Each structure stands twice: as structure tokens, then as C-alpha cells.
Image 1 (cartoon, protein in one colour):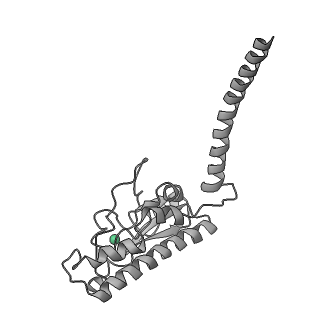
Image 2 (image 1 turned 90 degrees about the vertical axis):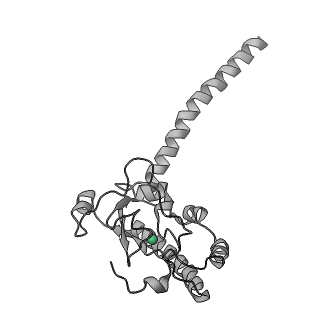
Image 3 (image 1 turned 30 degrees about the vertical axis):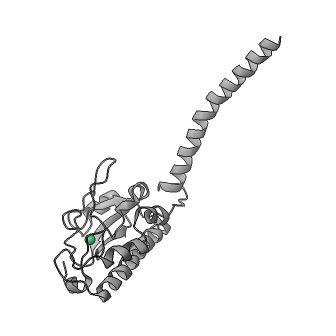
Length: 203
Ligand SMILES: [Zn+2]
């Protein structure tokens, strides 16, 4: 009798375990959809702010790194004021891009495209103006949010429209930044582009 009850108990546990797992997965998928995919749902998206911060160097790391850099990628000498400006610029550009995404979320933007405030010789070979990414890709790969390196002039702008509109927009040559599940290589943050030397250069 005791053996039979034990057997039944084990069976019940096994059945519960089988029933529980697919349900848990299903709930998680549903939650992800509601939070991160646009469409008919009332979308409450998670800002990439924290995930991006976890991938990027800290202010201290940047300061320490800059202290040991005497010239930028073009051989332009860096003064103390240039280093301070580069750190301030990095923080401001990061904030601007994040705010752009957070504000795009309020308007339900699905597509974002890369643009350049001025020419960025470091990013030029990695990202073309008009390359676009989806909000879902930003969520999955926060590293695709600029700035990519010190002195970077690349920005991500929200596009309020469908994929058809994105492709037909005035910014000619809008193509996906990447296809599939792996973002292409991005510039190293340690590439320094002096702000004073690049000033005034328009693309
Ligand atoms: Zn750049």
C-alpha cells in the first residue's frame, strides 16, 4: 500500500513537471512579445539604457584610457582639454541616442536608421548612412547603439513608418544594417577621433 502511494506520488510529480515547463516557456514568450514587439499590443518597451551601460566602458575606464593616448587615429595630438571634451561628448552622445530611442518608444517607432552629424572616418567602413535596424534588434543587441568610439559622430534616428516607407524614404539607399542573428563587427570604443580636428567637416 505504502509502495503504491509512493508510486502515485512520483507519478503526480512527474506529470506536474511536464505540465509546468511548456507553460512557463509560453508565458515568457508571451511576456516578451507584449513588452518588446510593436503591433496591436499596448507596447511598453524596455529601454536599452542598462543593457548598453553593461557593455560599455565606465567613465573611469575612459578617463584612464584617454590619459594614456597622445594622439587620435589621424595623428592629431590630444591636449588635456581635448580629452575632457571627448569624455563629455561620449556621455552626451550616449544620452542623446538613448533618449531618442526612449522617445521613439513612446511613438511606437519600429525602425531606426544611422546618420552622421559629421563625417566619422572610424565608423565609415562599418556603417553607412541610412543603414537601418529594428527596435527588436536594438533590444537584442544594445551594442548597435552609437556612439561606437571616442569622438564618434554616428547617431541613430527613429523612423516613424513601415518597412516600405523606410525603404522609400528620402534618405536614399536605406538597407538593413544586418540580416540574421549576428550584428556585424563594430568599431572599438578605444578608437579616438579628436573633436577639434574633425570640427566643421560635413558629410
Ligand atoms: Zn564613429
